[in-house]
Amino acid sequence: MCGIVACQTRPPALDFLIPALRRVEYRGYDSVGVAVRTTGGNVVRLRSVGRLDSLQSSVDGYVGATLDGVGIGHTRWATHGVVSEENSHPHTDCLGDVHVVHNGIIENAEDLRADLSLRGHAFATEVDSETVAHLVEEALADGAGLPEAVEKASARLVGSWALAVIRRGEDAVVVTANRSPLVVATGGEGAYAASDLTALAGWTTHAQVVADGDVVVLEDDRLSWRRADGSSTAPALLSTSLAAVDVELGAASDFMGKEISEQSAAVEGIVNRLADGICDGRLWHQLGLPPLSRVRFVACGTSLNGAAVLNQLLAAHGIAGSLSPASESEGAVLESGTLLVALSQSGETADVLRALEVSSDDRVVLALTNVGSSTLGRTADASVELGVGPEIGVAATKTFTAQVVAGAAVMISGLVYARRISPVTAGHLTDRLRALPQLLAEADELARNHVADVVASATDASGFLFVGRGTAVPYASEGALKLKEITYRWAECQPAGELKHGPIALIDRGTPVVVIDDGHPKLAANISEMRARHAHVITIGGPESSMPYRLGSPDGAPWGPLASVVVLQHLARELAVALGRDVDKPRNLAKSVTVE
Ligand code: F6R
Image (tube, rainbow, N blue to C red):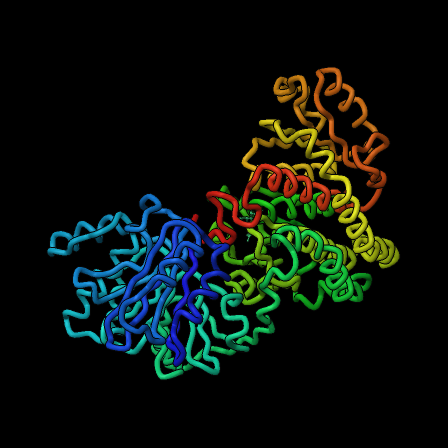
């Protein structure tokens, strides 16, 4: 889940590495470092604990030999070893000749370390990645060139890796990958590699995915491929329409706020794109999927909440679905004919990818992802790309609503295709989908105007409960997740009816309980129970809404009160801002979770 970048360019490498690192910083931000070649062929390493801004100071203060266009960079989400400058990438070999950045986990690092130590290698860090530098060193000592050395070193590794390697005195940057995302590209000024396409926005219009086992050499503005299958044929080009402006903040104060407010337009784009194929089942048919009968959802975190919404939608139409966190899928039994539906905004979540590795002769995977070129997008049997633009804030917002809406469109189309609902019913549901952009925009405006008052009433609370009933429960769960991840306050989601079975003991005088009130007839009694225990009830929707806001009735859309999530996102963000948190880069987290 770290971010790696690399380049071999005619202008100074730092011109690319620093802005590119900023773009992949969402992948981890414990520490950051670069290694850049000097014009004399040496390599200078600059590293720093904390965010990119701290590295920038070292870069600004650098007074050594002139740096040229060959370099690698890394932003870390610590797995092995504490957060320290010593443990920051790039890592080097015994001689300080080889410099390596790594994303992933070397699972056999301890064995390799023991083995290499026996042969006299001295380790400077606790980090698994350092073993790679020493393995490359050994292969070079045996007479291999840098690409062969990287290939040989990789052959000794178990686990996942995207690697970029440079060596003192060499012009080339060598990259390779296994079960970890990596793209390469050439542009007007040289060749580039990065953990994802957003890092390359503005530098190139086309990129290529480094598949497992491929080794790519960036040299002389070119890419030379040594494919895992022994060929040197380059893979297909992906066009990247991202412009630099798409990944910049503009006038907004943070990406999360910007992305919350983009939801109405994002959903409008999805509905416009998909609506025509819903009522006649064409959308489903074009995905090449078998008739909808049994579904298993696979997802994590926010995407799991999105999956819960879709699971309820299908259940309401008699389709049996199952849902569990992807990280708990080990040993899951997949009944024949079950469609696996994987939701992942990044398409790179290791838990999701592993959960799909079930052995079944008729395994079919449908992916809902915001990154069509991701591992999930490329390897699924059918993929629906959300197309809502990059989401930079670590907390997922617009990709959640996009998953729900795109997923609902696809599932409704599947229900028509499987003759579970009529085209007329699908038409009514499609009309409701078309109404969503307006509802989301209204929720956004309302929350912007009113959520601060609600937050002021709960700033000092150490913990929150989020409750709802029926189709509101996944949204309550998402509200609790957003709140805990960016405010660092405890937040627990419960179906409102479950409170009396235990969690109600948590309620003290003034405990904030956020209720998603979509008018469920049994909710009023639950609210009374909480009030009787002096809870500070914050209702979203309903007759006593804490904001002038109504969510509609429970016999409403089968995807439940989607617009409530906009209010919940604002609630979490506003509280985080009030508490002085970094809403875009909450502590301990990273956006793309590529370790299990
Ligand atoms: C929460 C959040 C995470 C992700 C989870 C899965 O705001 O972003 O919970 O939803 O790590 O990530 P994806 O959707 O990329 O598979």
